[in-house]
Length: 396
Image (tube, rainbow, N blue to C red):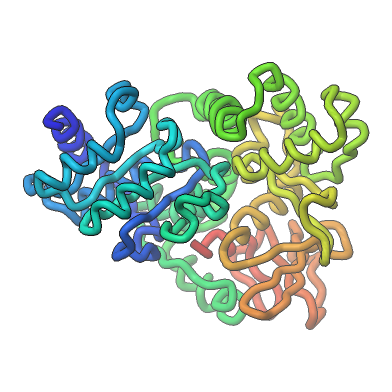
């Protein structure tokens, strides 16, 4: 136990000063069992340590961070460790990479039932289906940690404290909001940098970002997809090839039959693998209204713009970046996106409302149509139904 407390102290004391994530204020911390899911590389470990530093006195030893990839937990159960922790005054366990431990959900349930004064916060992969876990679904509160929004990227880069806005705020008050932001910074000056390397927190590290991202993607495939979904390792090359072929054409309509031939797997397996890639936050799938998985998506996007550069390994079209950015920033912000009737058009369902957005590069292509909003890439401040694309990066 002492070894874990020493590690906890070292990690908290040596945590860099980073901008607080919006999710920190959205979680109901009174819940006894909290699961935080997120793609590899988005900062789940840092998030746990930030929580420990901000809300607990390190000297009271009532909060403890543990990474469950420790070999110690090959012979020690979570339940017995939790008992010892509670008996010594412990109140909250922060369990990182919980899926590395076999029978983890069963033991978390045991801890929940046996130690009513203990709170557990754990992190896991987005591939994990906690809502379908028989042991936990009725007692766990699940939250998703995403990569940096454009707002968070600017706050870190420029040491600002810009607030987030709802989609309704942006639609109704975008001119006033952008004028306020543009009085402090030039948002388009940093927009391309965010597109290229701003989504994943490790852009702050002094390492080659693209190489680091490729390693992260491979770990997503090898650990998050193969291990959690229990796919044989021999299928890894086919999964990697499928991701690469989808990246080359993204955003594009997938030809399932051709992908089946190219990857030497069945059509059904192609569809299932695409869903695995989506759950790992590597791709996004866009459907027509009234359709959803397991039907074939109408378009496949990369999950975020950062992924497009190392996977395509060539020039990336500006319009592809704009559409991918828009989809990524709105996705999971209480918004449901469907494919519009024209290229570059999205139908967004939000708060019982339905909006049509057309993504454009130039303001001159926007038309005064009352039923349509334009998200324009080269614009700092808009008017009426014409909104700067970068502002949608302030949704979280």
